[in-house]
Image (tube, rainbow, N blue to C red; front, side, top):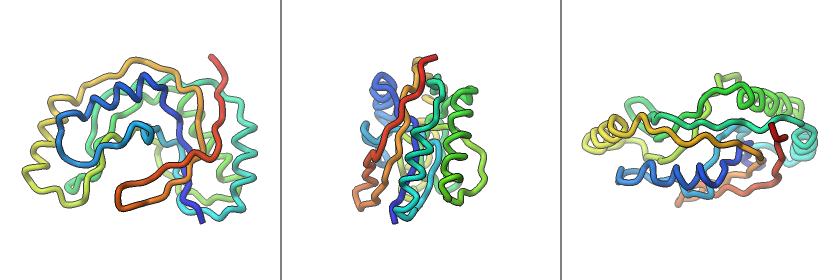
Amino acid sequence: MRRLFIALDLPEPLRDGLLGVAEGLGIGREVEEENLHLTLCFLDAQPDDVLEPLHEGLSDLRLPQARLQLQGLEVWGGKSPNALVMLAERVPELLHLQEKVVQVARGAGIDLPRRRFKPHVTLVRFQRGLPPDAQARLAAFVLSQGAVTMALEEGVTFSLYQSTLTADGPIYEPLASYDLQPL
C-alpha cells in the first residue's frame, strides 16, 4: 500500500514568496519549500494495482493551466489548531482541474469521500494541544498577516505523489508529473 495524493505544483516564485509568509511565527513546523503544493485530491493508502490506471487517466487529461492567486491565512483545526494555511482563489480552471482529477481517481477504482474542495497551501503544521500562549501568538500573527496576497502565477504542472510519514515530518516523492496546456 502506498499513501498517495495528487497536487498542483507551485511555480517557483510562489514557493519563494510563501517561505517568508510564516517567518517570525516561531511555533510549529514550517513546511519545507520542496514540499509546498496545492492538494487536488488526497488518495490515502492505495494498492499498487491502481497506479497504472491512475497514471494512464491522468496522462490523458488535456486541461488548461490554472491561475493561482493565493490570499489570506487561516488556522485549521478549530480549538486544537493543526495547520496554518494560505487560501487559493477558487478560479474556474482550478476547480475544473480538481474535478477531473477526482473523476480519474474514481475511474481507477479509488473510493474517495465526497467533500468540498477548499484550495490551499499548508505553510505550518502544529502538534495537537498547542499551549494557550502559543495559540494567542498564532491568533495575533494571523490577525496581523491574514490579508497577505501573493502575486498571480500560473500552475503549469500537477503531479502524483507518494507520501511517507516520518517522525521528522512527511517525505513527498513525485511518482509522475503532468503538463497543463498554456492558456
